[in-house]
Amino acid sequence: MPLSVKDMMEAANQVVPRIDTSRAKELIEQGALLLDIRDASELEKSGRAVGSHHISRGMLEFRADPDLPSHDPELQFDRPIVLHCASGGRAALAGKLLKDMGYQQVYNLGGLSDWVNGGGAVTASG
Image (cartoon, rainbow, N blue to C red; front, side, top):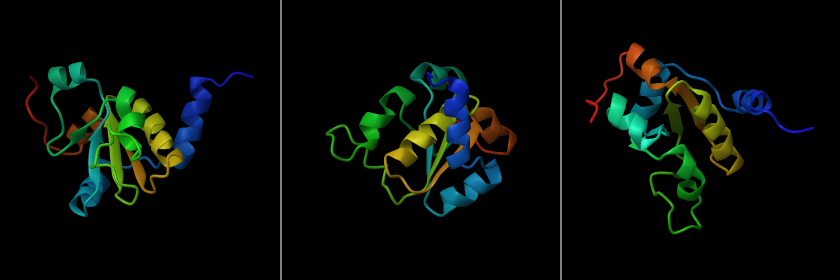
């Protein structure tokens, strides 16, 4: 039986905890990476969380693998990662991917609006 998005989301939500902005801020203060996985056009349109690092969802595997020349040194297996996208779906799926790749502490903040509604600062859109 083919795997559906619903199946993938259920699996992701079982292994990637959803956290609120308050918890995300605590983790970031302790050294966690706030990772925005939206597309560049989304960042231009709505800005980005202050202090966030950007890797688009489409490039995540290539930036997360330390054996590739495209590896992003901000991604470390023992560094907590707090993901967000526009609404939380891609962040959940990306979080499961990172867990499958060996990243130990991965969290789903949800969407940029969750960050903003929780009092997180955002840079102006381009």
